Length: 286
Image 1 (cartoon, rainbow, N blue to C red):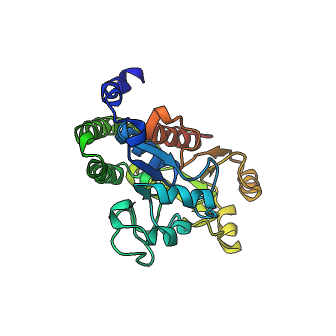
Image 2: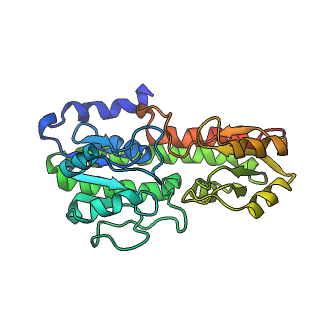
């Protein structure tokens, strides 16, 4: 990892005075990982949510509102994931907000919307979509801090090169597992599954976190081809554990937010953790 990160160090050492750096506020950990890799020492990146908070259901405290008010740029996925941010961000100038997926109603006009995977707000799990987002973010950072433009471009190029290598490696590792299926506690993996050709048997809640009904659960209980039940945080819900026990399969943690990924490992670390989780899940009992 030191060898990978070393090319970034000279740029970080040449960064602007911390008191003068732009403040970038990211809503969730995956966006923090991406933004920190691009920002280097030329912008300060602060994460709005704390580890373990569900972005679908968050109350915006006064301290968080103050942080948003101070931000030179707020980066979020969009109202389909972080609905609690829609109204506060509607009053900000377009240049102060970068929205990955617009979704829902138009809150406050064009905030730099970037189209992504339809129907699932967990779009950062698609490496191709992430590259497009990273390019847009690097461009916005360069407008915020023109003196750091060369550094942002250099770090973007490094980010894309690392991601290309990691993506290819993961594709090779997961290719033999494409004929196996799993159940998700929360349907939060769609873009990752589509990108790598993996199959979901079903889930206990939809992409927005809303629990599905008894008929859905009954159908999952009748399956005999499930490799595991995937949960985002150990030990998982009681319902997920009960379903796994009835099916005779393990509960495996596969965290789409990368909450346990050290910041130094970056976005590639999040993808690697996801891949390891699916390998553990889909190899179970095979």
